[in-house]
Amino acid sequence: MERRVEDLARSAELSVDTVRYYQAKGLLAPPRREGRVAWYDEAHLERLRRVRQLAAQGLTLATIGRLLSGELDAADEALATVLASPDPDPEELLTLDDLAERTGIPVALLQAIHREGLLVARRLDGEARFTAADVDVARAGLTLLEAGLPLPEVLELARRHHQAMRDVAERAVALFDDFIRQPLRASEIGDEQAAARLVDAFQALLPATVALVTHHFTRTLLAVATEHMEKVGVDAELAAIQSEERSWIG
Image (cartoon, rainbow, N blue to C red; front, side, top):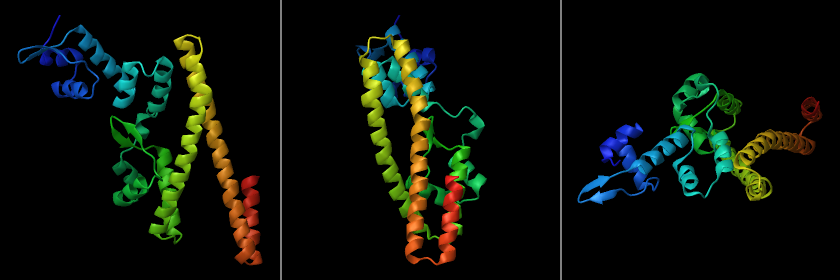
């Protein structure tokens, strides 16, 4: 059965513009043309339904394209879906305006913090979204400003922190790909088992990596603060830093 683009869009529950956009992005094969009329068949409809399914899971069009081309497999789809999954509580997915209202921080300042990487948004339907944890982060940044740190210096610190964390994250992901994902893809186990094992590995390693990085940064920050006070501080200041260090170490 062949359809014109209007009928295809209606059957796929999409707009004509969306169908044409997907086609322009290479997600839909060219139609059969009869003069100036384009005809689409069942394969086009099934492809659009598959694209809709993947997009509903939060996957980007770039990831969808690689899945449809076979460059990524079922295990990759499972992991990509976990990475793209929105927060389980939709009420906690906030726009930038919501975040400003929750924190009392002007939108313009939040936009600056976001640009520098201190706030890392989640993507939902192509839009930036934030969670309750981002509210805490934004308030923490406000605490630095209220303590007297100049905004340009705080933003510069955010830039340097973001770049350092980005470098660490990219290396961690590369290690995961080299030693977990690629061996699983090369193994002879079934697609479903490979997908389950890949997701399980990611869900186990993510909190372990976060704990490792957080612990190391906290210890390093306290050590540097202690070293600084040993050089320039008075006895009372050094004692206060050492007491704070002991409380964090427990």
